[in-house]
Image (cartoon, rainbow, N blue to C red; front, side, top):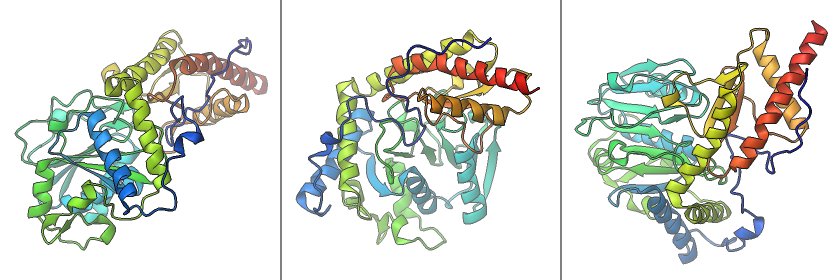
Length: 384
């Protein structure tokens, strides 16, 4: 029997894992102060870019001696820039448990051809971070955006490591408490947790990473867009707002709006609390149903932002087709948009639960998922 159509829809049905939902207070009018048609090198442009950097530092609690730069090409650009500029001085430990981490493995092993040891876990699992050699460089994602699996804590990373840690934290920054003393390179994009616009990335460097940049020259040529040093010294302007290429000042304004909203809800602690509340609504739903479960097997490593679910009913022979049909039903009802699992991930649902999403909307979505599941199950029975 199909559950009756839920009476209430989410006020905002946008649950995409990137670009993610705008903050609940967002309006286009909030961007009216963007210095459009002005040079990003003009005083107003430089001031906006520096404000974006320093407000990021303030909210995330990034140490004063860490460098923060705005770079092109989103989180991907930031990670590629870091890997091509910093790796090769020593062997590398490559860590992956989802598609983006697997992409970094490919770049290092097949493109840069650096001596590397790869540690791979299946979707839903995580690599044993205690088994890594931290005297080598280590490249990993903090939160697996496509698997719903995250690092439980940074305690396993030794303070006296000889190598650098390079962390793709794009779906963790502003939703999880990152241990900056354990991270030498951290990257994220505006389009994730704060719901900013695409194409801009953030690159955060520890003093140890800066030391590597200034003492090591890669064996391969670096395109201009990747160069972080000149004459053996860090190009400091990148980390004060003098970007490598032209940024969109409209996107910068949008990021500043998002940062100010983040401060209004309590900064990092408030954002973490909001993501936790969103996850809790899904957790309670899953715990009371026997036909759906988290893709992440260990509760300690379940993501609170990119929450990945799988259908567990053995009567469903083609889970990929079933999951696609469920997401189509939800979209047709405008109850939940962009809920399909990532293309490389196991079939299922992926619900974004970062701080820009309201817990009431997540709670309202859950009955709709059950309705769509039962409707599609009934449709399968009719055609059997």
